[in-house]
Image (cartoon, rainbow, N blue to C red; front, side):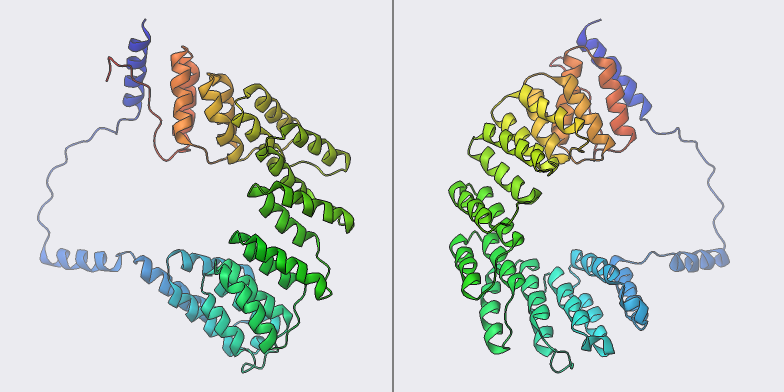
Length: 402
């Protein structure tokens, strides 16, 4: 049987299995009486589903009512999830309604409680409201210290108002006479890095020592990650050396940042040596460590090395993530290694990873092309039965079928 005939037969098989159930003709019902019509109308009205707007309004009212309980007000994670949900629907007035309702309770005199409200505004991207609440704290009998100041700075970053962080840092420390700490500097340095304003980031880094503040591991990790990620390898290496001089031991974040920098600089062999150094220092490489090497080898077209490091990842009981699969699949398909591609896709399904459906389809097409139809059939059924992809996988069509 030709490949074309086989594909047509399988295509028909799957179309038949997905067909809808047969329909049966039903007799036309008798016209309803006037009483029945009224009853039906009333039932339909009562059963009308609420709109999204109505559901959210009902939710907000419920939250405000339940906030009367001190115990409920301590459910910080719950407030966070509700605010994020409302922000996803752009319901900023509802967020304001919930947060403003909290100010009438005695809890607002506790700076920790006020900080959480400021941070909630930041999570919702409502920085101007966070600033307004910070300014109102004295009127609410809440003392402002570096803690609420740092919450305000963090709200700048969470709201992606990165350029405001420097302004807030300078204005508030002068107006309120708050003395910044290392956390304050770390937040502003992070904001500068987010804007790729590395010169400003270094200025703030240098200012820490002038103000008698010692930079910590978070300070260095913020700068290392930014420098190496942007290909400023020498700047990253300078920071790495400075960490050693200050006797600050690098952690997994530090090593992964440097590893990524080495791969970007095509120093992949040095990256392998760095991974060995991590293991010697009892710092277990994670999925991001292995991904850096796998991606580097994939970009070089070296499939065997990429597969080797993927296998090492598995041997060390590290779970691959979506980035692992997205790095490997294109090269596997390009070089015709559909068996390994199938293995990778199955593992992605097991771990519910997000991968490129186009690459998954290429694996199916490739298996059929090399006459591994049963494997392809089983895999398609597995994907479609699990609703793993947003749409059904298709069988490849030859030029004669098109």
